[in-house]
Image (cartoon, rainbow, N blue to C red; front, side, top):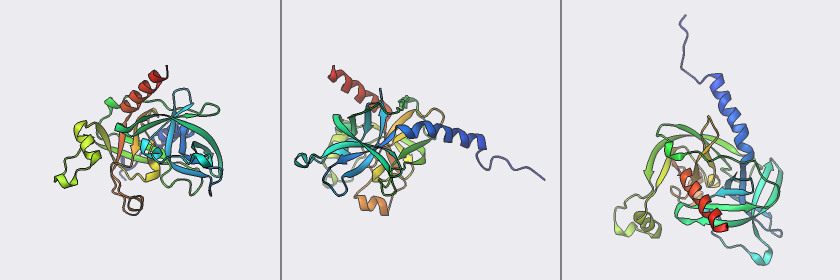
Length: 249
């Protein structure tokens, strides 16, 4: 009887990804706000991941656009832990890169496990990558989900519109300064914004999931996901970190 081969990944290949994930998950956190008088007090809005010395978290800027209710002592927060055992850390928004929808938070408390940034300029279309985050928030507790994502295309974020009536402020900004993004063959939900996109061999971050570029309303994103998502390449994260640290000096 002939032996079939190549019909499924080997056990060792699957184990390699699983082993890499063990080093990725501890650095992935929830991000949002904390209001001590709120019901509930914690509001997880997206995902982030720790970098540098473990006291900084990278996420997406659009998560933090709503002003804080300072009269109720609302603050930005990072959520760590697993299941229902959640530790809330206060966080300060120290840098915003609106052009690339990136944000940097400074987190109080002990350093977190970190992820390394890879060289996103070496990424190739056709690579199989992974991203880890909180697609539906903390509905089922603080349990990150990991999804495989094929790197379908590396393209400029600006897409010409059919008519002037379709122009808006974001489209005009993109037209004036287009930049490359990763198109992913994967479904990402609003809570995945800020999720690290990582290489299965090294765990290095090559991009940051951004749901804003392809989603309409939150309800539409949940009920009719497009099957295509986008990520901001890590080279823009590196540039943000360089600018943030240089301004701090």
